[in-house]
Image (tube, rainbow, N blue to C red):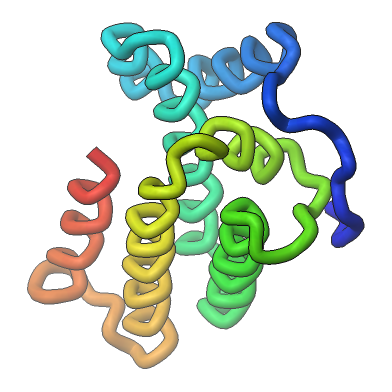
Length: 149
């Protein structure tokens, strides 16, 4: 992962790259991959990218130290700002794909940021000892999962 800007044309991705993301989702979350089969092709590519972003954010919840998860969430928050065109884009395959699939859909940046905020809230619970089964914390997990849908 590098913070260097990507000068590549993100207007269209080679078919092999699109298939690589599709295959990655199929390997890691076949149920969501199957759900994407019902979307139109351009929507399907967006869904695959969003589901893969969700997987990246889910990984933040499984760190041994919640602060490490919060650092990763912040990294994604900054990356999405770059995806929105507010700074040069980091060289990261998923960041580049998100930039490509949201290029003509700036309205999707706010929901992505809301998803990131939800993961940040869950990590706040983890950081401050509020990671307990049931109750408000579990409701946050379920709401985050529901917001992705």
